[in-house]
Amino acid sequence: MYGLTPFTLNFTLDRQPFEDNAKERALLVGISSRQDRSRPHVDEYLNELEFLADTAGAEVVSRVVQERDHKDPAWFLGSGKVREIEQIVKGGLIDLVIFDDELSPVQARNLERSIECKVIDRTELILQIFALRAQSAQAKTQVELAQLEYLLPRLTRLWTHLSKQKGGIGTKGPGETQIETDRRLVRKRIAFLKRKLREIALQHETQTKDRDAVPRLALVGYTNAGKSTLMNQLCPEAEAYAEDRLFATLDTKTRRMALNAQEVVLLSDTVGFIRKLPHRLVESFRSTLDEVRQADFLLHVIDASHEGYEEQMKVVAATLHEIGVKHDNIINVFNKIDAVGERGMLRSMQRKYPQSLFVSAKRGINLGALREAVTKHLDRDYRRCSLRTHMANYKLVGYLYKHAEILDKQYIDEDIVIEYKAHVRDLSQIDARIAALEKKKSHVA
Image (cartoon, rainbow, N blue to C red; front, side):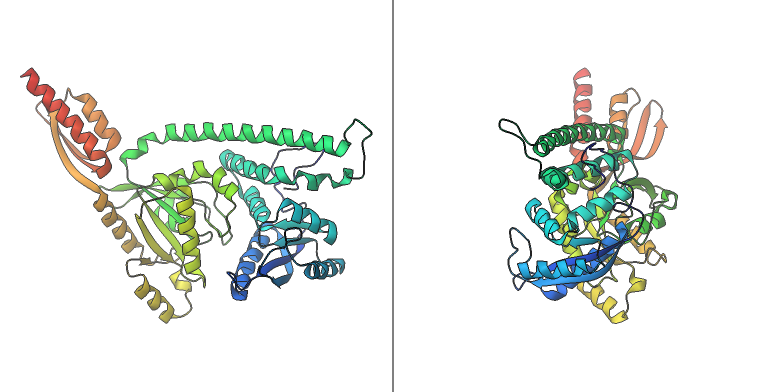
């Protein structure tokens, strides 16, 4: 966010961790409440926030947690806790204060003025990581859009150095004039990026329109659950980037995965989810997440070694609902079973989720069973059919090639016999075209 300088409003992504290459020393701040957030939960959230900070290039040196049922509208924390943070920062050990919840523009401005230190929230931290990880033109555009939408109501934070300059009677102060100018520039840039993303989405739809004939499978899950590692095991030629970091993959990668000699599916690796995923990012990445919505079914990859795996499952389910996934064609795949400390814990998970698969993508454990499960799942929604028609009926043959998977094709005299597999949603249209052709033939006879 701080890569957007006030005077030039340079709309390029900040590719360095925060403002320079040196690791900034960070203080994490969270709130615990009796209503919906116990102290153990807050500690778990701050552990994840520390992982996020490390991914962005900061070093966490301290934490502060306040027991408070209601957030202060002006300060987020109570005044006493703000003074405590002031003393910690004045001790010279802190360069950056990171809040686990999203701060309003007023709260962020008040805290920065009081603490005299850079203050960011979880949303801004995630946006920074996305900016660091974005590689493709589409991902960079999506991240920049989310950054600017986050920045727009917070522009006044960047213009405090002009706050003491006053305009005369009948004129506006220079700070206010510059803020208005920047807001107009930001709004124009946001409108341009939205048009650009619509164009990218249209291009993607054109390029992938022929995929409907092949079953589509998407990997979804919490960030760092091992989706890219599993993708590389199932499709070795995919060469998906895999690292023990949050949001190692932002761009969707789609490859063909052979289940057997005849059956092939398109497997897509998608961006990982996280609790409190900024709504702006969900909106910006909708074109990327189309692969999830359009998939015939999903493989929900779960980190079985994580203590909070069940809460992560809930976060993924909520995010899928938010992006418009309404079906339940989902196979739960518990990954990293080799990292589960106690065997009894693994057996307990297997009893609790008997319809799920338990694998280790890193060690290649139970991947054969996963392929078999995918094959069986496909058979639920696809039907094998046969058609014999005259070779002159090229329009019908072309329609089959576009909307079904051709398994076999033979020529008998002037007829063509086609064995195909089609999704149940397409069968009615295929049958209607065959019926119309037969009706036409009967009229001619």
